[in-house]
Amino acid sequence: MTVRTLLRRFEDSDVAITVYGPPATKTVGERLATQGIDATWRKLPTGHQNAFAVIRRDGVFAEAVPLTAMETFLCDPMAGIGDSGTLDSDPGRQLLHSALANTLLSSLTPAQLLATSHEFEDRAYRVGAGTLRVSFQSLSIFRSQRTRYESLSSDTALDIHVYGQDDWEPPAIPGISFHPLTDSTLEQVWLLAFDADGDDQNKCALVAEETEDGAFRGVWTYNPRLVDEIMAAVVAVDE
Amino acid sequence: MDQHEQPVETPGLSSERLDTLLRALAAEPRRMIYTYLAEHDSASISELTDVVVGWSSARGRDTDASNWDDTRTALHHRHLPVLDDAGVISYDAVQRTATLVSLSPSTAEVLATITDLDAAETDHED
Image (tube, rainbow over all chains, first blue to last red; front, side, top):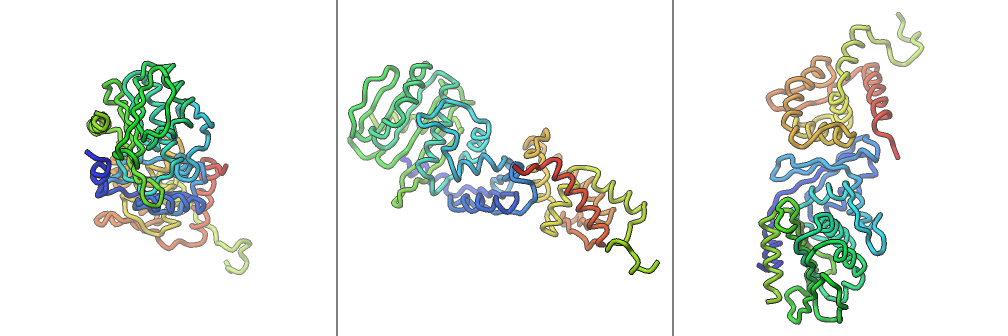
């Protein structure tokens, strides 16, 4: 399975999001549309705090989420996340990530990928065991995440594997194995997959591919079988 | 009574009419439906159910996605007929579509006052 074939599976999924709120929330609908989502804005005098979005899959109601979480992710994804990225748990962010799971987003920014990665790293931190495999395209990109991963590794029993183009000599960090790659399989790929030590309820994965204009098209999922498949595909890259 | 002598622009409502209107908006889902239709004139029951479920959850009411079907049933059998009987909307139970009816200025004013008070209480601007 390549990343491209994986993403293709989500191309035909029918997801429609309607944003309900005062005129100021119209931009959220527009931002969703730039992600390739069928998005509509409907005026409703809810006040900004109580604006919400309704997600329909295959024409059927799937979920209603507060707009604030979605707005943060779309407009200012790193809000509230410190430089090193504190390991925390934000219910709004969790809800947003479950709402947009299995939805192909066509124009993700690195900040949005980082926010999603942090959400999944936090989940791995809470579970505290299992295997976490990540690829940030090049190993050198890991430098900015080092503090965060040192905490992940030292505070838990996680088995962490970092993949990437061989452009940097990583330091030895207990609990973290580096996999320098010389072929181009993951060159364009931002990936994070966590097996939750076999607990299907906590498995998660993010897969995104850089497009020609520098944005990423990607998807994240909590589907355990899909996560298993992604984990296996990453392992195969370095065999 | 000569209309030109009315102290306010809108004539008063009979107490029976007022009772009917107050009863019509005595439930939060019906206030939500009225507020939505006041903006959009007409909507399908599915759309109104989305609004009631989403808005209730945004207001911190105890709801979850699984109650979407229950909410739709409540709208179809109770809330939309009550609003229809009060002459606030017209509900086509076959097409499952609700449409705001043309309201007298005094009726519109009473309904707007109630929904504004509701919004001021529950949807604080930050």
